[in-house]
Image (cartoon, rainbow, N blue to C red; front, side, top):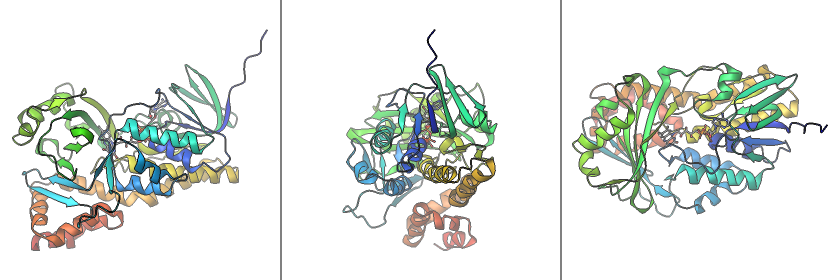
Length: 414
Ligand SMILES: Cc1cc2nc3c(=O)[nH]c(=O)nc-3n(C[C@H](O)[C@H](O)[C@H](O)COP(=O)(O)OP(=O)(O)OC[C@H]3O[C@@H](n4cnc5c(N)ncnc54)[C@H](O)[C@@H]3O)c2cc1C
């Protein structure tokens, strides 16, 4: 009788090969740990996303080992974006260039890059720079514990490890099984996107456009310009604002581009070159624990999406970096206890907590009738106020100013 082959065993298994999982693996490149990165998909895989990569993403890439940033600048296709165009609920428009004075000599502060391309780039870096094996087509279904090891099961087989990093996105299996998480409907948003060709009047510098339509507040409709005249367009809306069964996201999307007085003209004659596809967003901040005995959660699995902008790739990567560092410390100290790993929650709170709380407050303010219109109107007239907004948008350390009485005094006086 043949003996069954032993279960493959690792120090760490990272579940999910998106930005959070790949960044965790890259941060551990020189740790000497035996790491496996598993994903349910066959890679490279397309993702439902706006495809906008912010300055936070660029900053993490600059810190990662192995020339991640200079090599990112070489990947193709991607479209540089040098600013944001806000359209307030009343229709007033405000352009915020990053930086205020145009400077084409420097790389752009952000890019639009299809997730299939960006995630594939990160996964290639993991293959090149780390000894982590990537196991594709491995949808994790069960996680159990045997003494000090985890056993991770999918219909494809089993693997064993000492520690688990859950980077498996919105409906995290790791979060559900190991942390007992369920979806927080109050902080859950739904987004739908499609690709178009032939949308009119795009910004010449590829500014991303955020249209804060009254019916979507505090969500918005977006148009992100891409290569070859393509755009990624979509909308995000809070789950609680959708009347179950009565209106689908795709129907809302179609209605906006069919009947909105400005957008309908811009989409007239444009060709939709994909399906409209939807996915959920787990907005932060969420007070639930994101670590426990032998495991931690990163990225969307830890609900770290910015609640005002809907941007999650940057924070997923920031949390992946912090996760990698804490995991290395846990192995160095041979301490995988919940008490030790609580450090991870503290560092995430320290690094992202204030920013997420401010964005949540701004998300609420956006819905105050007339306020957004007033800020956009006044900033259009005042360079000073515009500069202040650019600073608040690009520098998380001063974003709190948005909540200060001084800011609103400035708005009134502008
Ligand atoms: C419509 C929409 C538009 C968005 N637009 C933007 C934007 O423009 N810019 C931005 O910054 N953010 C945007 N976001 C948010 C962004 O997509 C996420 O925050 C980001 O992908 C989080 O990265 P992650 O690595 O945590 O998760 P993911 O990128 O979701 O990666 C999770 C990985 O885990 C794998 N996985 C899941 N379950 C399992 C399992 N059981 N077993 C094995 N593998 C599993 C998945 O296949 C996936 O590869 C948008 C989101 C939506 C829905």
